[in-house]
Amino acid sequence: MPTSRPTVIKRHALFTRFWHWVNFACLIVLLMSGLQIFNAHPSLYWGKDSHFDTPALSVGAIRTGNGELRGITRLGGYRFDTTGILGVSGPETDREIRAFPAWATLPGPRWLAMGRQWHFLAAWIFAPMLFCYLAYLVIGGQLWRRLLPRRQEWRHLGKTIIDHARLRFPRGEEARHYNLLQKLTYLLILFVVAPMVVLTGLTMSPTMDAAWPWLLDLFGGRQTARTLHFLCAAALLAFFIVHVLLVLVSGAINNLRSMITGRYVLPPEKETRDDASQ
Image 1 (tube, rainbow, N blue to C red):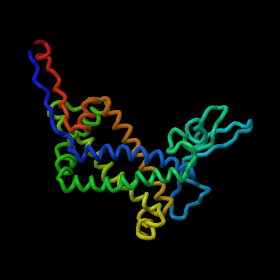
Image 2: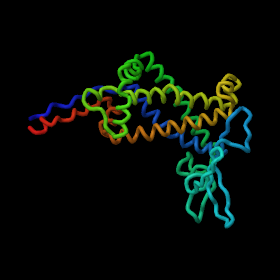
Image 3: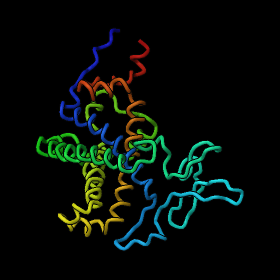
């Protein structure tokens, strides 16, 4: 029997697509330049009055009795050998002491001043674009229509999680809308994690602290803000990796086309046993 033509829908508006790709570029620059900045002092602390001899997290190196360099990452009272990944990187004949390796930082060589310039350039694009997009979602009604969960969706949350874990994705009419797991993830990233990155970044600025001293009280001091900034950046990186993987396994061409042209082809419903036998 002849198959029906695929259903094509308009999935993403022009502003959403523009914001997505600008945001994509900014996040790469922010993450890599942020690691360059972190390398200048590879330790994190909690509290307004931080004790620099007891960091919550530190990445460094030690030299063993035979003169070998070993990368050491400390998390609270735990210590891990992370040679070749964190603390010490490079070939055994030419190992370098640095928290994150050169391939993960922008720029690659040790250059704190340039890393800060890249970071601030991307930040002053990312932050205004983020708040413009949040305003667009709220004022334009997109938040209510596309992202706020409906009461009946909570009944199927367990099944949705299992389907995602088994890489089973919505098809047909069900694919027109985000499922509950997607909605909750996007709400968390857009309205909690990303704004936290911006606000904690501002808290680390002495100029902004002078203008808005309440930021220091809100986040418990500059060092706590730095730690929260790092954790939120790590959450964004985790989201970024999972997001890219899901885009690839759920239909890379279709998903990319929807974010470039706005047009998305609904995946057809699975054939029933009777249809398949005809």
